[in-house]
Amino acid sequence: MKFAKLVCASALMGATVLLPGQAHADPNSPCFASDTGAGVESESAHYGWAIDRSADAVASNIAGKVGLVFNCGSVSDDQADRAFGQISSLIAQRGLPVSCFDGDQGVLSTDAAGHEAWARARSRSQVRDNLAWKSAAAIKCLDTADKRADLFAQESAVLARVPGAATPDAP
Image 1: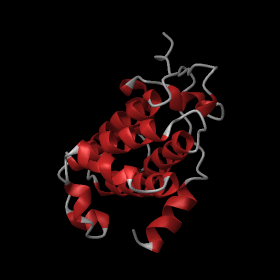
Image 2: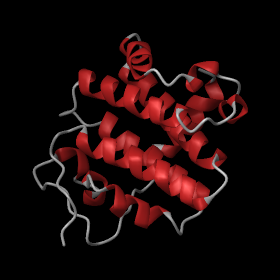
Image 3: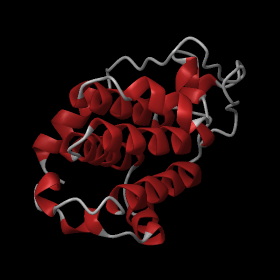
């Protein structure tokens, strides 16, 4: 991983993560105390938030959510590594060119288990920073708002389920 990627990902960790008012997470989840909307499992709620926002805003938001989950003490390394594998596979399934990821060929693999194995051999902060960077890079590389919102929604739903304490949005 290049130093520039770490700096970029680290800068994104401070991003504020916001979702619409109707989204509610489990109040017992310490992971989403600063942003209950991030704990919503509903892809449609996340999609609705992202569809009218800029690529930069969506990229910053997903990187912030990665930070919330990976910095949460109630999330085990096992849970974090599994989420890394799942989300990395979702990103690879988009078929984006390697140029979106500074030539990192590993990003293109759809093998979730392979990504998870990569994560298990790294520190939690390295995994967090890599996922924040690659998630943001993928969002910025997608060419339409619909594609960005779709990936954002899928990634957000995976992240919401990691602590096992998220609830669907209220009616």
